[in-house]
Length: 123
Image 1 (cartoon, rainbow, N blue to C red):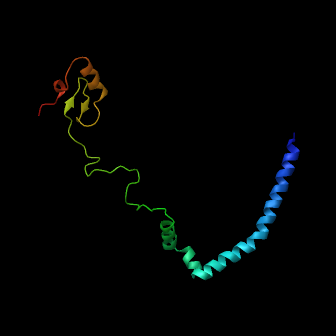
Image 2 (tube, rainbow, N blue to C red; image 1 turned 60 degrees about the vertical axis):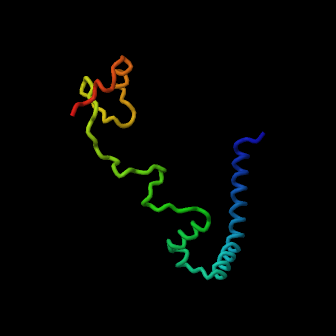
Image 3 (cartoon, rainbow, N blue to C red; image 1 turned 135 degrees about the horizontal axis):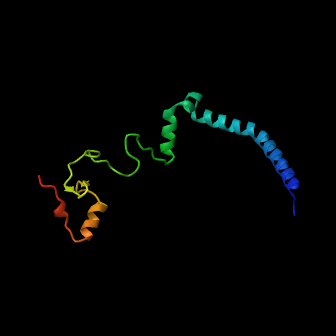
């Protein structure tokens, strides 16, 4: 079984080997990239432009979503966030518009045998 010092020595040795490989292959990789850039007529401006980056992301099969569309999958209604008048009034002043889930205070009263209409606000 190896002890901590031996493992740390192995890590140092492997790190040196990885750096040597990287140094050896760096120039070769740069030459390959330059050759492809020349073959396709790509310049530094092309690499720096946002338009090219966006187009290549789309071509790679990664669809881009416009920033104006919601990404949560939910669609906001044109009335979202608008306040509507309450239709039900509880014994302690609680109100409910009649939309969404029935509030706990009304559910408890209905469970006691009352009806929703008993708490309807008469207009």
